[in-house]
Amino acid sequence: MIPKRQLKGLTPYKPGKPIEEVKKELGLKEVIKLASNENPYGSSKSVKDAIKKELSELHIYPDGYAASLRDAVATHLNVDQKQLVFGNGSDEVVQMICRTYLEKGTNTVMATPTFPQYRHNAVIEDAEVREIPLHAGKHQLEKMLDAIDEETRVVWVCSPNNPTGEHVTEMELIEFLNRVPEDVLVVLDEAYKEYVTASDFHDSLKALPNYRNLIILRTFSKAYGIAALRVGYGVASPEVIETIEPSREPFNTSRVAQAAAIAALDDQQFIDTCREENEKGRELYYEFCREFDLTVYPSQGNFVLIDFDIPSDEVFEHLLKKGYIVRSGSALGLPTSLRITVGSQKQNQEIISHLTQFVEERRNLNS
Ligand SMILES: *Cc1c(COP(=O)(O)O)cnc(C)c1O
Image (cartoon, rainbow, N blue to C red; front, side, top):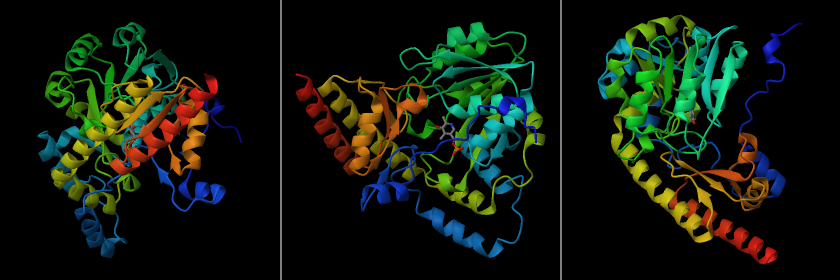
């Protein structure tokens, strides 16, 4: 068998260490995973009831068009139903975009490090990937513009950026959109939008009518807390959606997932609470970083990226032994940084006390 040439060297996505495996390996009773930016508070209580109602219908295919969910999201965002495309997670919307626009001979521009699935799917489509390094955790939009040429089809902007948490401001976004050629699609990934508290964050939905080449990605996996059910979506001009739709699998979001997403969307109070708690959690980490003079980027997401100035795998191992799985930056091209998902306040305080112990011991050794 001869696979596509470009798949050579491509590895499957490596998830954080599974909880059960860590429990067994280290003989721990409780292990908490704060590695994939999942919601420490779960999801809205109404989600389970909505799912139960679907359990008698499991033999019937879902509505591939996701009409009820489409209606709910369109109303929530105040956009037309024709402006939405749903995916099996926004991961699948990323895949659909790549399937639609990228092929051999084309190129695509993105930051690095950023969400790895942009690159991964672009490589599968055999497009050239142009990666522009972040500066101080932020997209270098000017340099990204410079990288665009005749063969550029898609430009990716992740804001807040995973893994740094930094965001693009409203002014920066508009200036950028004004300068990207009209036939180049701008993908603005707002997976962490619900956690944003910065007043200068972009209002991309407001900008949408002015830019026919903009698609905004959102997900139910993070703040809405239903990562297991896989629902994400894109919002764009009806023309862009119409172009992408044929690349979508017929029944790509499940019946259960659609019902859960509608219920999750309906509980905005849950989202508000999560946002407030998350902001408090981020502050705890900033305080810790100030105390020990560690570099941390101001994050608008539900995670913080801390630079420990030593191989982060060591810090990762220390937390692992205490029963906390976080994400070492070594896999993200940031070998001295650790990405920690903001947990419940109790979890944050525990992690911070373990980190304090670790940093103090280290510094005593070296002094
Ligand atoms: C988690 C994440 C996603 C993927 O979310 P799903 O909807 O679960 O596929 C997309 N983009 C970014 C930046 C993420 O961090």
